[in-house]
Image (cartoon, rainbow, N blue to C red; front, side):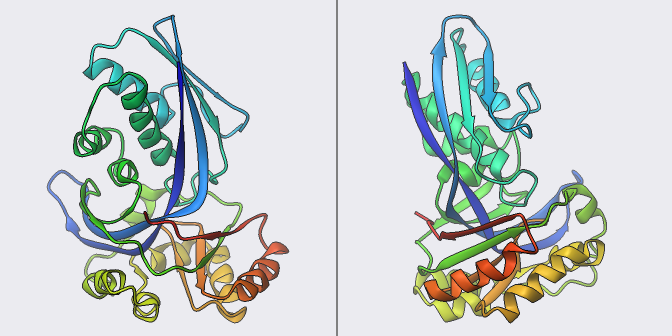
Length: 284
């Protein structure tokens, strides 16, 4: 018995931090959507009671550090499953990029095992389970466009955003999310207008959407990593309608409705960055 699951990357259309909570997490408000860049997972039932992770990517751990492993462990423990599972991950999403690749793999594992073992767990319950693994997993379970609140686990789904091309560029650096949050000055934040972004999506208004992209972590990452700012400048000068960093970085994306312009931006970045992609918004 086996099932296949697609695990799409996400980008932040907005990322706002409201305050630091007593539990030391930050209260966030984020509008996120999925893009047509995805890992693919194959989940195969095995007879021995163990979790096996396989991937050709050297960046994918094959033990409990892997979020897909943690997701399988959580399902087995929560539902008293004694069967084993092999998870083969075809890794396409850059690692540690601000694109929720690991979280999406975990969410795909939750969805896949729910189908494979006929557990009949609701999407809401899967998302609640996912919150035990990581802040982005709940969003990734829904696999759509949504606003995430709390520490990222409170999800309200939204319609599909206006169609456009997305050009992604990830510099060859790693960014520590806890470090970025640690350096965020909560008393000096230019908050994005989340309500206007929600309106843009609900009314399918592309111009309103690009006018209200915003990420409060961007200014912190830009100070620490000059490469991120250089990519932003290059994308803007190459004709992107709007440019923003996703998550805590370091991936930067640009939006455009014209395929020819997307190709031009892609070509301008290829000499500067190894990992560059041109994809579409999914959001459904």
